Image (cartoon, rainbow, N blue to C red; front, side, top):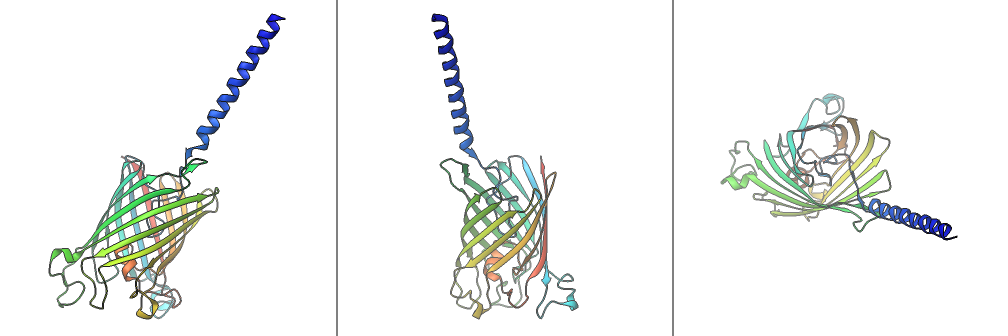
Length: 299
């Protein structure tokens, strides 16, 4: 009888240990950090919540064509494919798993041309599965410099009396959440500061509010959307300004390649360009075809 009781006690102890192990494993898995909210470090033009892993570099080329329709598009320009509003080429690098720096060169779509932009993005918090962190949080900052020769006409936006007139700044807070296994949503309030502005009552400071989303169709393909809305009395349709809105199809080919095709009314590709200076309207057919190719590799 004693041996039987001993046997039962040992079995009971083992069952308790097994149950405790399952409970701890479940607790750890419940607080597992979310690996991927978006597939890429950018949505279309907008920065996403994602950062590169430490030691990884991303080489990126982007192109925006001319108006697909409207007075500047159609067959005469082969639906904008014979024109180019902006071209971008550059690198991003992961200093740590939560810190990314970048250097990019853009043609520039507005009066400010030949833009050189340096950026940093730091991820403050990552969403947990079943944990106490219901969303991810990051901050992104950018400085852009227009390097083209200054315009000869005094009073023009590109007539730079001092070097600082070439420089613009941008900082944004990025909040993102993955909802279910396929859908992700992002909100990113931002502040843009330009050292020189048009002489039309414009202000150096410009606050904007942006949104982005991603829906995964299958393992490789996803639909992406973004919208950036300047909060300014000047930047309204009656004054010829519009929010920068885009939609695209993203294809992750594996091996570090991400390919994207998109439609957007934004002519520029950097925040200090497309947020203040988008003057193309979707309603008038002034949107364009574009693509972005990213190749990520480890150094």
